[in-house]
Image 1: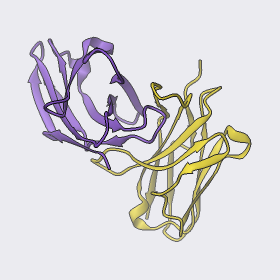
Image 2: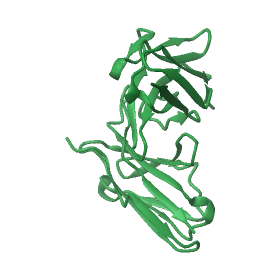
Image 3: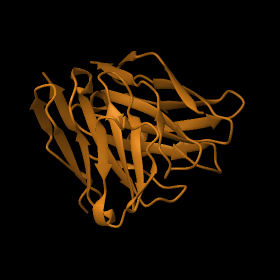
Image 4: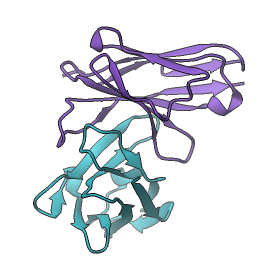
Length: 114
Length: 114
């Protein structure tokens, strides 16, 4: 069975600073990895995904993530935080691809300080 | 293109009452998912449909929960009878069902059981 660990339930950064949200996964087979964002009272929106190929994945809103197999990690970064980035971020894993059910982490609440 | 539609958005009921949630997926998406999201947690898969067939319902509490997807389009998730612990957000998602595909989420139904 697969699992996801997101380090830090809350992360606070200043506007304009680097955003780093950590995600580690456990999987017995090569995983498919996803980052979703959730704004209050809304559903989840895909930021980016890793399926196969290039390990550095670029997503929407300036976010990117790097798949590191040796570290079983898929950390999310953004060079410069914006106030509109304040939201809940979820890392998810699937071993059967995007069509299978996703296993989510508990989420990280990103706070942007003015 | 319309996204995943869910109704109602909010529902408040007394314990032991029945409740039903409705989901209309993105047109052409043959795979449909129901997830449960407890407060402060990531979503957890309840059931996955491929067309009309429930291909993964291992996490669905079958003593009180039921789901159907007639004609392989809309889906209904039912709880009967509801318990206090069922208070949560119920998310519906859909995808084309391909390995590299993305799951698109609806806004969810927030259930409060009193």
